[in-house]
Amino acid sequence: MDIVMDKENPKMDDAAVIQWNLITNSEQNMGAKNTIEQGKAILGIEFGSTRIKAVLIDGDNKPIAQGSHEWENQLVDGLWTYSIDAIWGGLQDCYANLRADVKQQYGVEIENLAAIGISAMMHGYMAFDSKQQILVPFRTWRNTNTGQAAAELSKLFNYNIPLRWSISHLYQCILNGDKHVSDIDFLTTLAGYIHWQLTGEKVLGVGDASGMIPVDPKTKTYDATMVEKFDKLIAPKKLGWKLLDILPKSLNAGADAGKLTVEGAKRLDPSGHLKAGIPLCPPEGDAGTGMVATNAVKQRTGNVSAGTSSFSMIVLEKELSKPYEMIDMVTTPDGSLVAMVHCNNCTSDLNAWVGLFREFEELMGMKVDMNELFGKLYNNALTGDADCGGLLSYNYISGEPVTGLAEGRPLFVRSANDKFTLANFMRAHLYGSVGVLKLGNDILFKQENVKVDRITGHGGLFKTKGVGQRVLAAAINSPISVMETAGEGGAWGIALLAAYAVNNAQNQTLADWLDAKVFAGNTGVEIAPTAEDVAGFNRYIENYKAGLAIEKAAVEAKK
Image 1 (tube, rainbow, N blue to C red):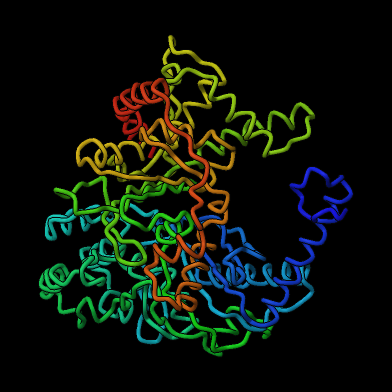
Image 2: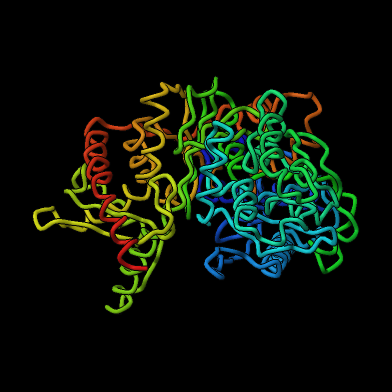
């Protein structure tokens, strides 16, 4: 009798299972190799806050190779920035790392691709003159020096304009009387800049565009009324341009966004192997790629990204009843309205404390495994009191606009009578990492009665299985799903958008295409909140809000 080669077959012995796996892996590798050799692979690259990542996907939208480059922002003259040299050096090293991975796995060189997508952290300020020279160092989303501009524009537009949005940076420069403003020929985001240099096209995906100045969901481009109001506001300055003269064109997901030029190919791949002529999809922000990577672009879905910073994205069925300072209105990559709660800080302070425990292990002569250390500390946190025993953590490495702080001071607070245990200590820092996120989402769910069918989590907070999910579920009192594919992150998300742009032969909507071609019913593993955890987090957040006065005093005391 023949044994059917199926690793789930109970009649297969261990040797047969190993043989089955070898055959399967060999076939998969051969398929991936052919895809790369035939120029059918698709590349997604995303510039995150601490890492630039590249993902290569096959015809089934599955990752087959990846590359990365670690980098860090710099505080220069009081502003957070990345230099132009760091941007291009990082991109080229990331791509070289991808090429090395392809060579190691498949023994081939990347010569051609079916499509490319570029994504990056949203917002910020990159202003260029007519000679394509940057006028001032890139100002990232992390900067909070735009308070006056954001407040005046929010009043003018009757719309919440966050500190980090490009229009806030631009108007603050105008208010400051900065001389470079009259020389602006093009204003864009980091993703828009890279795309422009690779293709020559001054365009932006609608999701990223909505973080420059508000977008009208009906027209999928910049809100005409707000543009007109801004132009009237600055007219007395006689700067020599109007707003639409300097902004990139807003494009919907799936649109033609240009092709890789000869010069662009050389900038991406200085080795000279990559050919020009490859189509690119509209460049997008990390919020949009996070929505794609978690299949959260339909109305009544949402996702939470939790890493260096955190943000939640809830796709709305209708507009909110009024503007809220804590909530930013952006769009999905296909133009649906999204309520975004963006927090400048998330896991950085938590990671710093885990680093302290690593130092202790090293001091004691122990072998350190960071995955094990995170796992032990995180899981132990779940044994603590649901309200953290009264302990408080403020993870403010930088300012936090949602709670009204232009600067931050990482702070751990306890009173003599609080239950100071390791479990409560770690739980307080886990709660603190999503505390600001909860404040914003309470407005959506409690005041605006927004309804969601599914919220998906992704990012570093969710790497330790089950813990980040349970904490977030308690914070926003909603079930949280995590998919295995969500770990691929925004680089995979922008690769999917590139695939959608070139492979959507049936002209499906982005949401339908993702359902049919990528996720096929996979909604991930869900954890629902417990009544005890929700009640405990609610007690914690009340203490947290009362304790914000301590954080503000710390900022004032330590200049």
